[in-house]
Amino acid sequence: MVAQALFVSEAHLRRLLAAEGNSFRRIRDEHRTGLALEALRNGRPLEVLSNELGFSDTRAFRRAFRRWTGTARHRCVR
Image (cartoon, rainbow, N blue to C red; front, side, top):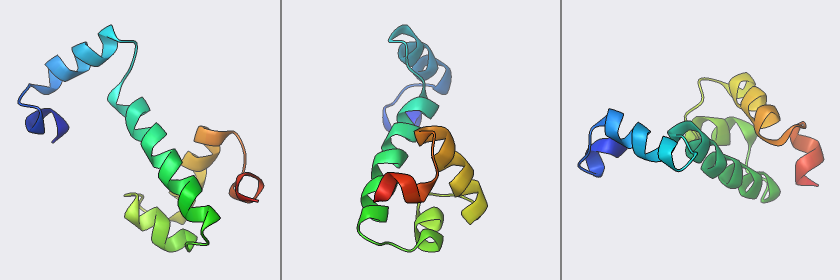
């Protein structure tokens, strides 16, 4: 979808990102981390946030958040 919006193939986009030492997943995760931290600081319910960020359930979001930040939600938000 992103590659299509940029009028390039997925393979070409992956090569361009790799040439810069980056990946789509890394960029997406950085973006999601920022959104999640801000939303949690503002008291957004975890169930709503995990759904908005495209996770199948709250547990999947929690695992991703721990991977992104290295800690559980409550420690990062306070």
